[in-house]
Image 1 (cartoon, rainbow, N blue to C red):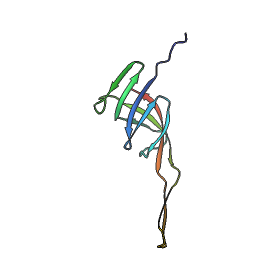
Image 2: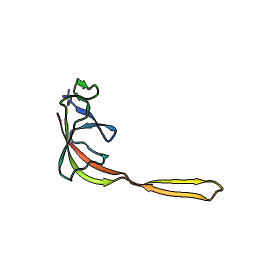
Image 3: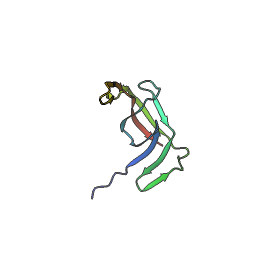
Amino acid sequence: MAEEKKSKFAVIKTGGKQYKVSEGDVLSVEKIEAEEGKSIAFDEVMLVAEGDRVEIGTPQIEKAKVTAKVVAQEKADKVVVFKYKPKKNYRKKTGHRQKLTKVQIEKIS
């Protein structure tokens, strides 16, 4: 039998959302003020799992940290908001592009 690779992952909170991350993952999160190429640390770690060992925070795990490298600062696709009232000739069209930061997870400790 082939030996099973132990998976290590964590659940972090940033920008009001929670993300399940593993080392090497690239994900887009709400904008973080950091330059491209810089390392950042996520201190709000809710869960860390490695193989059969799972550690759950209440609500966060003390001394747990996930470090990531900022890959790019970008914008999401445009979301069009169109309001109208029938028979009243009222129409309003607006759009929104959310600013995002693309990060690559380097280390879970």
